[in-house]
Length: 187
Image (cartoon, rainbow, N blue to C red):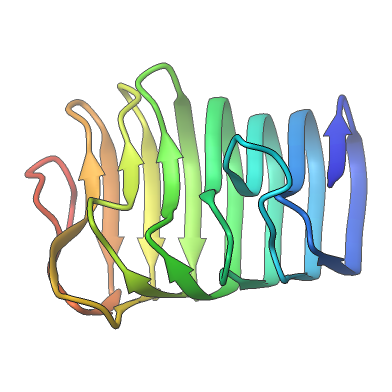
């Protein structure tokens, strides 16, 4: 696990993370850039499922060019707590995801100007909506991404809360009837 707490103006690049239950724990950071990272052979070390990124209070930062092997991973790929402001998540390739949440921002979260683009998420099982943005006033753009479900077709991927502005533009998907069942998103 790579832990960042109170970090400012740092870059993490060209890292391979193997056999952990959580790759990154990020708390109260500004201008942190994570790029060219591989997360491989995830494992459940503790009884609490974790995932790839646990993010709390991240500002003016980026996560780019990350490859995630989801086989055996539990929890949430991108778990968002409290504030996520002016963040770019780009060129993510996540494969072999088995019934994980891709993005989760609960009702207490404050997501502003999140951009997720040029990424591919391949799931082999989906039993519930896998991307949730429930914080009032949340603003995010998902653009030019590919979402693939190779398992049984599921109704939708995104659960978008009321009073949010989650834009879904030029995304490709298969294995879902539609990307979202919410009228709050801008498709």
